[in-house]
Length: 179
Image (cartoon, rainbow, N blue to C red; front, side, top):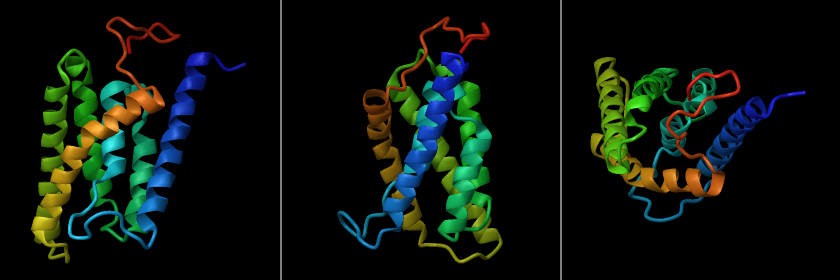
């Protein structure tokens, strides 16, 4: 029999894959909701960052790598570049999660915004260095701004609709490790 902690972890991992599949499906649909001049947010990256800031044990690195690499292939982005950058940001946030657990949401939001800015700039720089055709820089930064403004919505949905909350200080898992 599987212990409840492992079952809960694997349930949230499966839910992340399901949500990623839904997001990808909606993004490839041939219609657009809202103004076509404003790019939509990068929901998968925001979802991964919101979850890793709350419960890093629910979202392993390899799972995020597989999902984002799949979207790289599907959306015909340079293979692995965005995946690597998202993973660098994810691990940066994961390493700071114990310290940011007690900080207010505004500080977390600004930290995620800084990570989004850093990976967006790095992506644009790498594409420019290798002379890869890329969207207009203003659209790229507009998407980053829209993503930053969407982060609180993703966090609210993760918390209230899905039930991913920050672990209370001193919380341990079934093996006695601090969460």
